[in-house]
Image 1 (cartoon, helix red, strand yellow):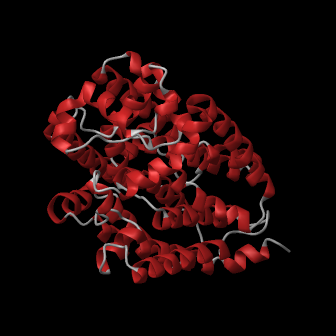
Image 2 (cartoon, helix red, strand yellow; image 1 turned 60 degrees about the vertical axis):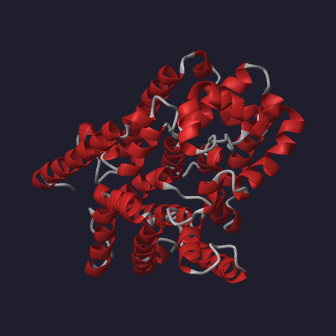
Image 3 (cartoon, helix red, strand yellow; image 1 turned 30 degrees about the horizontal axis):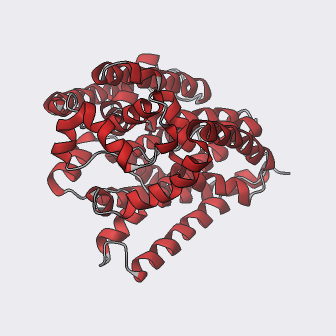
Length: 413
């Protein structure tokens, strides 16, 4: 458990990170009223649906004039709109916000995200016994003191909704309620590239109850999507996403150096910006290797220790971030769950060696240090470097799980 001294030091550190975040938001405030943040994509989708034009949601001809109507300066500053490229069912959430002005809607979504963070803290506090004695205010300070979480707040992103889905899925998994675990994971399909790799482990392990829960909710969300945009709109969605991903109109989609995952690292290191056959081959092989390792260490029995199950959940989530097609700063909010799961295990007696513990704690310290992100983004423009830290974290977690293997197997007898 955390001693009073460590709590106080953690509170001071996290308060410092939060102060830095608020300072950055203050300096970048000019961008928010002109519609520069990512929230503009959701507001655009909400306005299109409210106008009854859902069938044409995934067309540039519709999205451009709608976004320019409330964010003309932001579009001019960026050189293009920010297109809504998320699944149709998510657009429905923003129809009520479309009634408000852009800034009113932005602050309303900001408050919703704060509430989501609060729920995440409460749920995790109930499921992580070694961290539970820490006061709730410290949990919340940790949440907003983690830069990817605050960045998601500032940008008006939906990454915290995915974090909530994973948090509730872990809580269900922790209670051995597998159907509910899968159901909660399906609610994260608003960013399906951050869900599908994680579900592969369950599919390989034939955890049919998890898969059943996932499919039930996925079918419901698919039905809602058809109701929102119709069959024609839904059929047009994949081609729209593919076009958005590869067109030079949205130049940032072709620049992977600020993507902290395998794709970003390989695209930045190998020639061809990730488009060469060599780069694609290396990416596929590296992704399959991480997926295989994570699956091999996934507890295959109901009798696995809670520490094993907890670390395996964290390892598979970390693997998902590394192999996902996209993983921007706001998506790293999922590391909040990963690090708390690992930290909770490290606070209890375990088979984790001193060397493994040191590497894990060092990686978490780096990932929680906001200046690291700001330097990599603002000065070097190379967030892919953070992938090296994530890989070191992954390797140490693999070693920690492997060293606990005898204890896991002993639980099956």
